[in-house]
Image 1: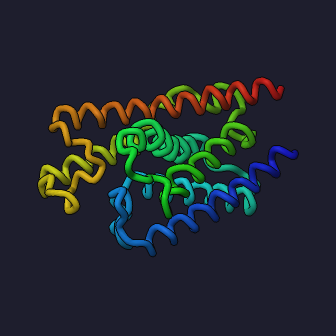
Image 2 (image 1 turned 120 degrees about the vertical axis):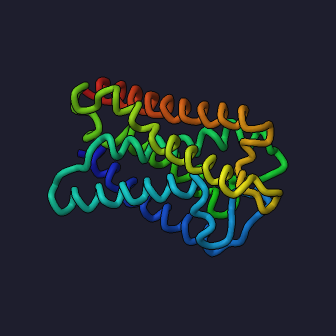
Length: 216
């Protein structure tokens, strides 16, 4: 009962955090990290899109639970949480270490790169008991499907560059710098990101299973 209350409380916080981060991000201007633009241009970033997805899915889950006492699918929740998990991991272990001179936890990105992903993963794994009702309710294939967000985003990212060109900094279509070493390396990086997305989903599923098994 207590875990359920904490879960609901954290979900409410996630929605509030997403709104807060969105307002800060969209009202701000482009910064020296290159990971924040002005206004609606921020929608080009996987970070922003994944956090908005997480906020929307969490809000729908809350409303469905309050109105119908039901939960939306584990798959949809896993997709959204693993997406922000990718954002957390790529920034923490790849982008920030590579570009140490840039602060990627400034302004709205503090919420999108750290606070929201961490809160979402903690809530999902530790407190949302509805996520694990046995192997059948959370099959392994869900982890593979969860990589769909990075596949779709990566495809759109590369197609945009092929159509409109890479451009030059700061007016570049390669805002993540994945093509700095050429297209072959860039494609490999995106493939790695997809694998990371899958690995994050596997990690979330494994930890969720362990937590719930221990609670039995």
